[in-house]
Length: 75
Image (cartoon, rainbow, N blue to C red; front, side):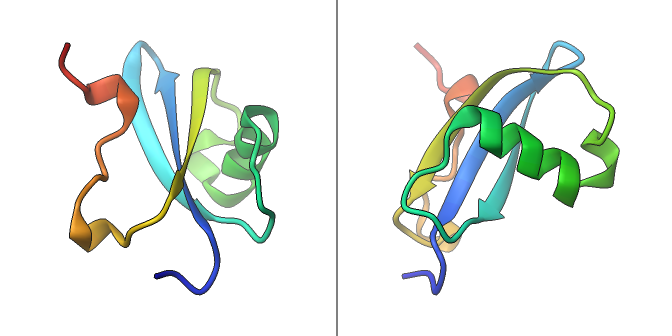
């Protein structure tokens, strides 16, 4: 498991799906706060127009799989 909770943040940037992983101390991370944290922690996203921000709490380390954000899932 992780020392701190990890969250997978998926979003659309310039009509392309993107995702980043964040550590966050709280029990829950809402999309608005996630967007703010992305802008603070990733310089390339500071002034970017993000849409469709989705948050998933990670329960397994990424090397155990389940690291595909919802934007990439096939129907």
